[in-house]
Length: 552
DNA sequence: CCCACGTACGCCCTCTGCTGGCCCAGA
DNA sequence: ATCTGGGCCAGCAGAGGGCGTACGTGGG
Image (cartoon, rainbow, N blue to C red):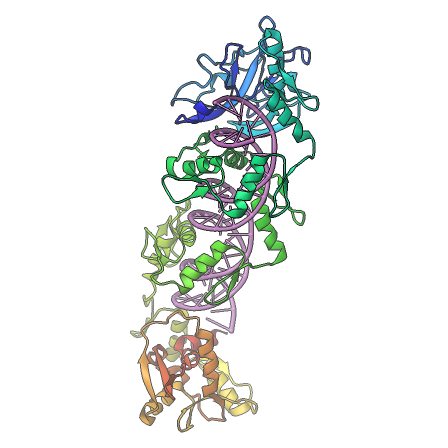
């Protein structure tokens, strides 16, 4: 076993062996011909159908032995060839495929519960094979009895048996020590925590953990450990990078057997740890524990900067990096110039915008078609400033058909919107609305833009802005584009301070509002504080919005 | 008795990727 | 005003690394 661990690329399998095998076996599977007439029940599960089965034919009373151990194999070497090959030729009607194909990373031998010699044994470690799940049995139990029989048969040596379990040893001292595990006797008590142990060694290690005594120091780093086993494991993780436990299904390998066991659950889908509050089940206890936080609502992780709380440390870490960090890395899309804060969101971006669509999507403005959404949206932008709608009676052109319809009324003289109160007609619905409010609605109170300094009111923001500049109170701040800002709502709230409800006789010629003013911000300077501008009012007065109102 | 070694379980952590709600810019 | 697309963001789970500890056994 040790020798096998020291090799470069061992992997775990069960080896068959005859009596001539080496002595460094880890576990033995005894064939009990009395238990099953068909011989040893060594069964491999196949991906489909019934599992193939083969037997270990007894040879003149010899016992067939199986051992689970790590074995070094060169790439391409058949794991079941050579001196230690388990001689298990397919029986009548049995399938040999799984066995013949057993090379490196190939299926392990599977011992199926209820078959052959193992039918009465408790199930042990669950492992997986290429196309199925293996169930290994308590090989230690099997080992002891078969070892005992072997020894007795050969009269090699006296074997000491435990009366309470199947333990067998060649040494009486080992048996004596072993027998103690069947009692609760723990004579070695820690003077620091009163915890009791069976052996002095266990107590010493325990006390060393208390005192921080770590006799086993790593020669390659500053780490030190209580036991040599810890040191050995540490060295594998950090220095030798030796990973003796290799998955038979994929290329995963691990330092510890328990990690391989955990990994194999990702192949088998086994989820032994079920949540008692919902249907979730986890592959290991740690995940279940983390999951339970979702039921308690607990947020154990707090941002030290803004005190925001999070359910997982990783989430908090990303928050701190992106909200409070400097030089936060961004991920640039390889297909466009977009920068995205998170790698996972870049994945979403790539899926949504740059993935190939089997059915090409046509542009709604022309005949062009695209298999990529991003290309389509970019193409559509080329239509953005096109004035595709032209008046056939003058040089007027516009981007939207509805604008052209309104324009044409100037040629036809059509005024389809008539006031029900006085009979006056208008080309645009908006004009009718303004007329009705001004002349027939006594409850109407129009919005007023008031100069923050002198209080003078204006019906239009642009006029107030012009006045305010002369008033010396404000300065115009050009804005080239509409910027995304989380302060947008606050700006809107500030706007309400400027707006006052005053009866004014304005709202004439609203369609002539200058759009250039919509692209500027007015920033009153009050006590050194820049107040947000009434941007909403600017956009309220755009031509496009008026036309929208007409449509309604 | 002691040590080395292997096994087993647990804990904590990180990295990763998916999901859905939120928000904003643009149509 | 409304809708929609897309980035931002927190929640959440999968997978794995590394270590702590207890325990059993073989062998010197």
